[in-house]
Length: 158
Image 1: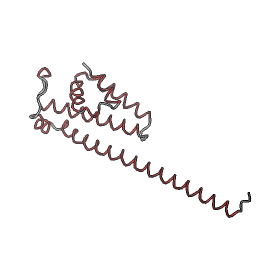
Image 2: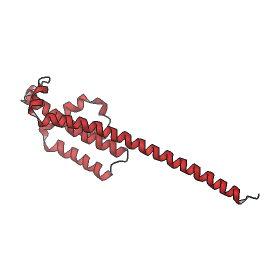
Image 3: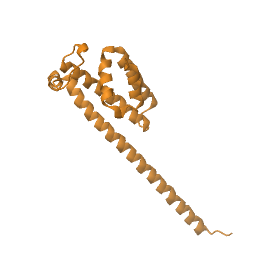
Image 4: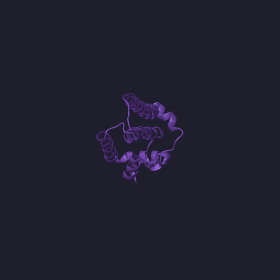
């Protein structure tokens, strides 16, 4: 079998085109992944900002509190209860965003482990906050499969 230089260069050119197309496909896949994670992060961040406005502003919390009844044994006003729930939601948003980023390769294991430690510390440091986390987790069952939610649920269980 006698292969000419022209045929050899044509084969090399075809191989280069195929490799280039595979690289472009990979880059498109990565761009889509980054866009999806970024979009999710932005949605969670907007939600977190909203919740921060509730737990930092007693007037908003009192207004929204008129729609909620805190557990009688808690001794809290409606506004205080809403502020606690907003704080819990804010924390949960941070933790779930970190898990999403980690599982999509956009967050280092070290930073993710820091978030896990943050969950343990936050929920252990102030047992009085556990009520808010239990109530919040119960309202968002769609998140129950996430590792950070499983950990938080385990820690705040009565």
